[in-house]
Amino acid sequence: MARRVLRTAVSAVLGLAALFGLGTGAALGLVGGGGSILALPALVYGLGQPVSQAVPTSLLVVAASAAAGVVPRLRRGEVRWSIAAVFGGAGIGAAFAGTAVGRLLPDRVLLGLFASLMVVVGIRMLRGNPEPRGACTTGDGDVDWRSCLPRTLAAGLLVGFLTGLLGVGGGFVIVPALIWLLGLPVPVAVGTSLVILVVNAASGLAAHLEQARLDPAVSGAFVATALAAGLTSGRLAGRLDARQLSRGFATLVLVVAAFVAVQTVATPGALA
Image (cartoon, rainbow, N blue to C red):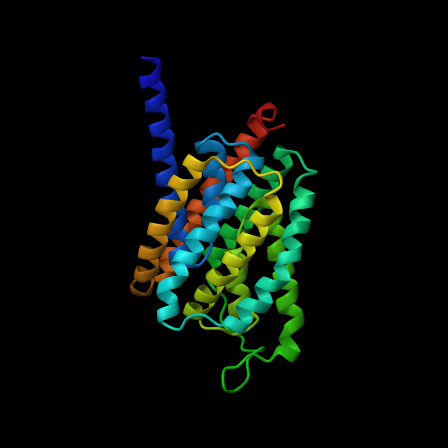
């Protein structure tokens, strides 16, 4: 009887992990970011993982699903490799710095910061993607690195730090930065963002490896469905209304942010 109950409980947890993985992969494939905004609360509140375990698990899921989401965009030529290299490279060291800071902070503080970040993300997405300014592009569409390199490096450092600190890939920052700072078209910004997400998430995961305690079964179920959803949604992205997708996802982000904030305030002892 006890074994049957245990098997049922394990199956329920793995089922939830698979379900949450679908949402994470779909978000990354459709809007080029936001997967970790769903993954971390799902792991902490849906699957009961401590923040120290949920952060590296979230990074693993984001890296895998972003890699899946970029595959169909590669075929459409929606990746600017030089920009991805500079932006992603800047964040590698910053991810280790963010990880070091995160280890000094209690779970309550980290989750409070995470909820605050979610509110910023939700509001930004409700406002829509910024119009390309083109200030960093030349007449033939290339990037004018002389004027844009400092801003690109600064954005890369910020995203890398957030990746290490909170286990977020930072696609919600990367996409508008690529559009507004570098003047990339939205599809190219999303595709390039996914490559940067892979670099950032892999860097953050490497920074956490020394103390990471991943659950192989949960991580495997989460990653497997996130990969499938990322591949499928990446193919569908071009056929759907990007603005409506962004607004719908923004609403979901704000709802989850409110939930995380309430839980953080209401259950301080559980998160100490």
